[in-house]
Structures are given as C-alpha cells and as structure tokens.
Image 1 (cartoon, rainbow, N blue to C red):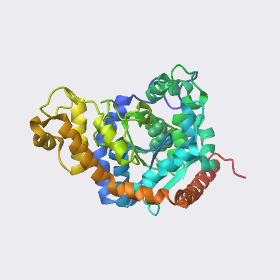
Image 2 (image 1 turned 120 degrees about the vertical axis):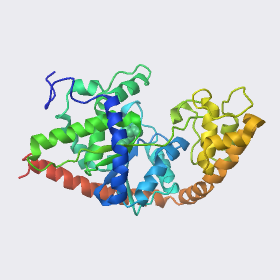
Image 3 (image 1 turned 45 degrees about the vertical axis):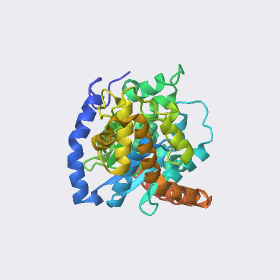
Image 4 (image 1 turned 135 degrees about the horizontal axis):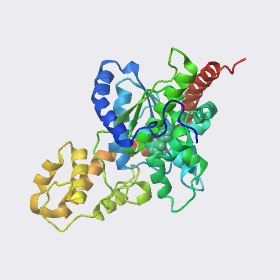
Amino acid sequence: MTSAPDGPPGAALGSLELAALRARQRAQQIEEELARDPSRFRVLTGERPTGPLHLGHLFGTVENRVRLQRSGVDTLLVVADYQVITDRDVAGDVRGAVREVVLDYLAAGLDPELTTIFTHSAVPALHQLLLPFLSLVTVAELDRNPTVKAELAATGGRALTGLLLTYPVHQAADILFCRANLVPVGRDQLPHLETTRTIARRFNQRYAGAEPFFPEPDALLSTAPVVLGTDGAKMSKSAGNAIALGADTDTTVRAIRSARTDGDRHITYEPQRRPEVANLLLLTGLCTGRTPQEVAEDIGGRGAGVLKSLLADALLDYLAPLRARRAELAADPQVVHDVLTRGNARANELADETIREVRRLMRMLL
Ligand code: TRP
C-alpha cells in the first residue's frame, strides 16, 4: 500500500481520543457561534433505518436536532438506507423502517418546513461523490477505523465486505454533498468525521486551488447523558432493551416493570455503583425537569417499585403529546411520502450542484 496522499502513513487519520478531545474543546465555541449567527452553519446528521427510534435517540440526539432546527440553522437529516446492508446480509423491510423513523422524527417535533429529511438512495449524485472520495483514502487508513472494527466484530464472524470497509467514505458523501459544516453525532461516529475531514482537506488540496470547496465539518458531540436500556446496557434496538417512542402504554409499563435494579431498597443516585437504578432516576428526571438526585431523595427508602411507578407515570405523561401526534400522522399514509418527496427533491438539487462543481474542479466538464 502506498502512503496517504498528504502525509506519512500512520499519521493520517488521527486517533479517536484526539478527535474526542478536539470535539469537546470545540463544542463551547460552536455553541457560542450558533447563538451569534446560525446562518453560518449547515447541519447534517442522520441514522440508518433499522427500526423505530427509542428513548436513547430521543434524549441523546433528536431533542437536540429540534433545538438546532428552531435556532434557525439549515438542517438536513439523512435516512441512510443503503447503510442498512453494511453489517447484515438482507436489507429487510427498508421502506417500512424508513417510514417508522420519519414518523418518529415528525412526532418528536422535526418540522419539514425547517428540516430537510431525505433517504440517501434517492439522491444518485450523492453516491457519485464516492468515486473521487475513494481515491483520497488508503485501504490502510480504512482498516484502522475502530467503529468499523467494532461493527465487524458484532456481525458474528462475517467476512469484511467492501461496503462495510468503505462506508465511512460513503458517510463523507452524505455529509459533503450538501457541504454541511456541523455534524451532531455520538462518540462512536467520530472516526467517520475524521475520515470526512481528511477527504475534504485532500480534495481541496488536490483540486480546488486557493479557494477550498468542501468545508472540514466539525462534530457536535452530544452532551446528553447516555440512556441505558432496561438491562443496564446501552439502549439499542438490537439488544432488545429499548423502549420505542411509538410503543403503546402497556408495552411501556411492562418494559419499565421488568427493568433490572438491585437489592438495595434505599434509592440513591450513584451512576458508577448502581447504574441500573441511576438510569431509572435519570429518565424520571429528564421527564419531569428534575435532577436524578432530587428524584432519589423523594423516593428515599420506598424502594425500586415506587421508582418504577414514578417513572412509568412521568414517561407516559412526557411522551403523551408525541404519541398522539405520531398516531395522527401514521393514520395518513400520504404524510411520510410527501415529506420524503419534498426532502429528496431538495437533496437532489444540492447534490447535483455539488457533483457538477466537483467535476468542474476535476476538469471533467465539457
Ligand atoms: N452511520 C450513522 C449511524 O450508524 C448514520 C449516518 C449515516 C450518519 N450517514 C450519516 C450520521 C451522516 C451522521 C452523518 O448511526
């Protein structure tokens, strides 16, 4: 393998730790700039449609997106449908999953007047960016991506496919097709942001002359506390420990009742020593605008049963408007279709403009 186009091998993509450090240092500055002049930013973020969204998404990212959207930042959300097949062999009912995700977005307050919601498979020019982008990274660099390694390890012995190896480059295309400069993500996505920044920088150096064409986007690391699932591990669809935003009352109450706790009746907020109890306190706090410590003091020696009842009431109250809106939207089959048609049209306009400019810079236009 040859060395990276702009530096010695091994020094090219930077480590996850460095990236996390820089993201944390930049966060404060970015928040200040956002408050001063939201028009300087274009936000792109999204997820792969592998099923409906859950509480971890809501408190971790979706509420932050609603906040960004309301602050006047141009926001785009990609439903990364091709990414579904990065770590599995069959795509399943992608259309159904996309529909669930979009319903969750809308119910949570994302407004298609302010936020462009699109599926990346509907935007051909976005994928065309992959060709020049792939030429700007080495296989050695792709091999080092810790998130790709973790995802491969979780596939239960599958061989590494070309798509899984290169999906961070695909993700760079998701971000750079609209020249987004701010990407709200969780920590696991930081390596992909590093790849995106590297690609932007190398493209600019190689093709753009004095005026950089692509921005080097910043990650906006979520400051929200990590919500755990009912078993005390990180909440995720695949772990079967999630409470879906659109779940009904019975399912929600049953999930809370079955949540793991510990043997100590005296309720205290100790995230290190008592992660499961701390998580239930955190969720109750998030739903009632209190700190988890306050909730713990309220409950005192009344035990985990009382904590669970409090959480069930608080959560059902908190989610009631979202769930009512979701049911209304779901009853009209046209809504999701219209939102995506409109979002895909705008995404295509932006992507067509970008690929034209890329081809011009690469001297491919007639
Ligand atoms: N890879 C992300 C995930 O698995 C989803 C995603 C696809 C994404 N394209 C993106 C996130 C662009 C941020 C920006 O969650």
